[in-house]
Image (tube, rainbow over all chains, first blue to last red; front, side):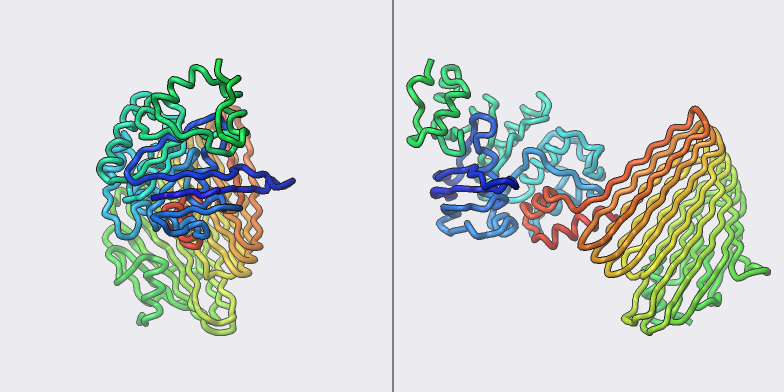
Length: 251
Length: 305
């Protein structure tokens, strides 16, 4: 359904071009839950941004239902059914939550912003009229961000560390929301996370390190391995051309 | 008589689709053309200079006053309006001005408004400027607003000017007495080669007086804006200024913060920010299906709401 073929992304940091993703190949199937995990700076968010079109591909292709979307802009990919919940969503002075969620639903959607807020554990009465400005805490903003993804019927929804900044009580609600979204809307979910409870939702876990796909495995295996592989090894693993863990990494 | 253009201008500056309920005075090209007073609100022509005295009886509640001004090409209008808002009243005042200038000559409006918000009264004042017309003649607004807010009274000001005005110099001076409260919301958008300057000075002369001034502006193309927002605490008071500007094209914005405390318990804050639209905001809205231009419009619309 969504395929990344030998995708590379090079960004210019002002001094020199830096290749942040190298030859990433990934095939995501319909109606599955994928959890992307791996060490910080390994390339998880970069893959998500490349899927959404925020980072342009320097090499390789991205295909959605067999159609090459590599050259499409962000809004064109959004209209094809790709959504991305930011790790650190921006604030909007003057824009109320109700208007934001209505926009997120798109021109044809019949979203009910109240229900969306309830889905992410926010009281609609308290939040609908609120502006998304500096008065919003990081956790509140994050939940509205997730609600904005729930507003549209998507083929692929990418969530970048959705649990960050969210309290323990809401975290439970969040996992239920992901299950529900997956079942009700038949959306393929890609969740970037380090949390065991999120990992346990996964049909497959994608291990990303050093700008590469290091492994695609099950959550049982990754949770077992996590006790035996430290992050330094994951880094070396990512740098390894074969994409296999070095034997010396295992304790 | 009001023509089609007049009616459109009235809608723009005063949200009037028809002759308003309550007290009103419609001024066109320097002449009053329609007026209505009510039992509680009397509108009287000044004897010594052009303008009106608007007298609101103490205890008047839930009533409104509309005093829109309409101007055409070649007209330079200077008007002095005085508002006496009686103690304990609660009123809504709309004083918009619309210029339709299709020709080559300047059209200018200078509105000097003086308000006395008496003890315990509450006033909401909306001032909206609108300019239109294809001609090269300048459209100029220079409002000066002086407000005395007596003890326990509240003044809420909403000042809006979105495009269409070539030059504006806005002066607002407010004195707050004991336990008086001021809320100011200013919205300004300039484009092309337009120039705008806004000076707001608030003197806290009474104990426990408070003020919140929120100024938001967008400067596009080659336009220039200058803001000088000044809080002066002469008593125990609380004041907060928030001045945000979005910069686009080759526009220039200067924001001059000034807070002065003349009393040990004056608590004054000034926040000012000037910058482009954040890339993250654009990207977020684009990831919801909006084009870059649509995203920009959404952000500006929200910012200036």
